[in-house]
Image 1: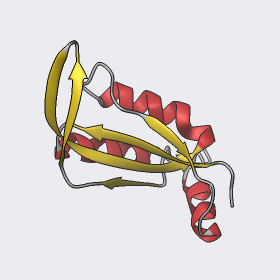
Image 2: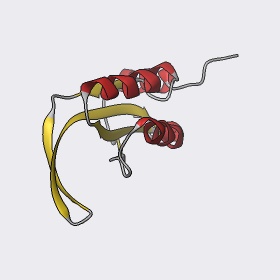
Image 3: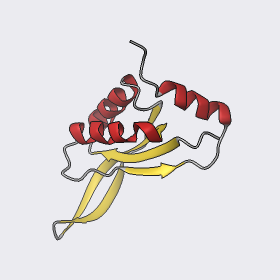
Image 4: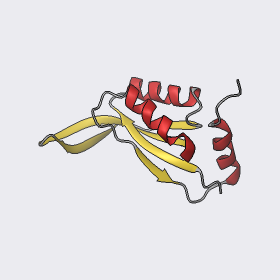
Length: 110
């Protein structure tokens, strides 16, 4: 298993922004694939107030080397002051898929 493979979890406040984030991440080779989940209700405390917001979950498949650029891109597109961006290591999986993720996240040759 490629030890470089990671999942980045994030969200977007609506489907249009979720698609925009996914599009940029994949087009710029920052992620091999981004899954957009069904809208769900997120409950959290923000600045001392209980919030309940509908959000679209994002599961981003990338490599550890691309994480700083993924974080930067999400922050540049996201309206939240503190967007959710969590990086999770992948400890196993189907090797050909890991190789594909690695290939897709390489910067294109110029």
